[in-house]
Image 1 (cartoon, rainbow, N blue to C red):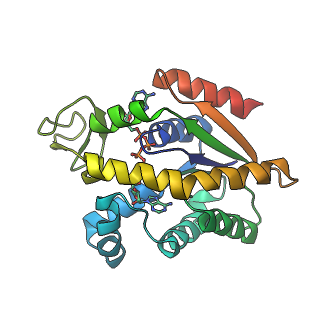
Image 2 (image 1 turned 135 degrees about the vertical axis):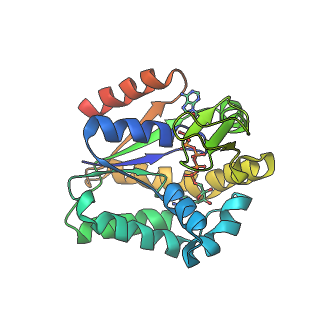
Amino acid sequence: MNILLLGPPGAGKGTQGERLADRLGLRKIATGDVLRAAVREGTEQGRNAKAYMDRGDLVPDEVILGIMKDALAAPASASGVILDGVVRTVPQAEGLERVLRELGRTLDVVLLFDVEDDELVSRLSSRTICESCQTPYSGRPPGETCEKCGGTLVRRKDDEPNAVRTRMKAYREQTAPVVEWYRRRADGANGTRLVTVNALGPVDEITERVMRELEK
Ligand code: AP5
């Protein structure tokens, strides 16, 4: 099964993506994680992506299409994937369709996480991550210690208010049209379902909502 997670920044794509990958035994691919790892490792891709990410802008399509192609062609992806934030523009949606077609696969479900703006801002402003192992925390201030590895908690640069505003704008202007693109696809004969999930409420409850949708 191949599943794409769509939704604004802070909608819970990463949180639910982890849980769904565990529950369904699928590999999770998150372009944000791939890019942040490249920034930490100081690769050319990371150096090029950093300025876009810090501002909250989308990284150019050709970079994402390269990541998408490599990740999907890997043997670990053969039995299905959870794609977290991998598609944020219409050219990326077209690119994903092309890559999957070349691999003889299709996208089964697009899950659109729906959360109101005030809640998104509140979630992002209270998030920290471990600078060593990248574990995310909610409501734990920067400077505290990571429970998993003892590293220090820091705020993501793109969780600063200006960058959050830019990310929300990028979502409205560049990613919202992707939802319409999939809606038209779902209405046609291509077989991809578009499912809107109410992503407000306890994390466990949202996972159960998603699982019920996937069982349909
Ligand atoms: P990325 O890391 O993917 O950022 P994002 O899409 O903005 O998503 P977030 O990680 O902020 O939020 P999320 O929806 O995953 O929510 P999460 O579960 O973390 O991308 C970063 C950047 O990389 C982009 O801005 C762009 O520059 C670049 N990029 C990546 N992919 C790209 C692409 N395809 N094209 C171009 N550029 C690309 O939850 C957020 C917080 O809320 C956490 O603290 C969590 O604990 C909390 N939370 C989760 N669920 C709940 C709940 N139910 N109730 C309360 N709190 C909750």
